[in-house]
Length: 227
Image (tube, rainbow, N blue to C red; front, side):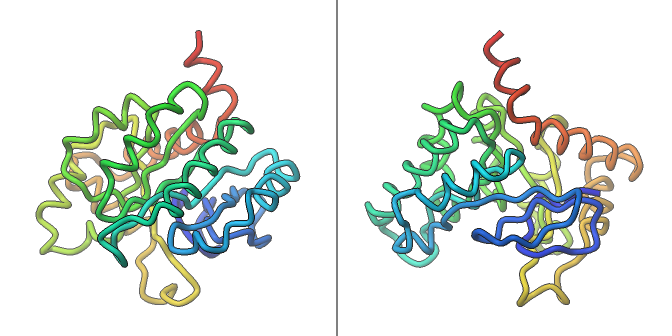
């Protein structure tokens, strides 16, 4: 099963790894390179990102985006770094993994001009109400369901999970080196998500694996959109 957002290699069949410029990945894993919005001050102008993408034709760009967790006012430099990385993703025709804590509306707005230039957008950790889902769908966007779905008190999040269109849904652990022992497996997350959506587990796994395959088919996705 595919873990659509992790920072380390785990026991899944395939991992989408978003750990900045890490070379660690398994045979079936997909790497995503980029500068996290918390680390925007480390941006080098894009040289390292371009080099990494040129060396790995299967790689995407991520985790990139905007963030209001640490500062209510988004720094202009953070916006500039996000925009620069979207431009590079468009240049290389690679999918992106997005971060938008407490500012998903602004992330969606920033991505809209790239609808026909970036093949696919993965909204990691998306927890906004379903009102943005039509805009995300128009971007050929995917939304990954995370560990919060296992929290019985996360009533609003569970309602959001039920409303994600079938063709957009994925699952993620968001595991890091620091929390790997505490984070649930994507199988547990998928099982609960299937239950909430009224699906049997095997059918739901087939659905998300098909979605994961479509997401990483970068070039074919953008070609179909232009037809």
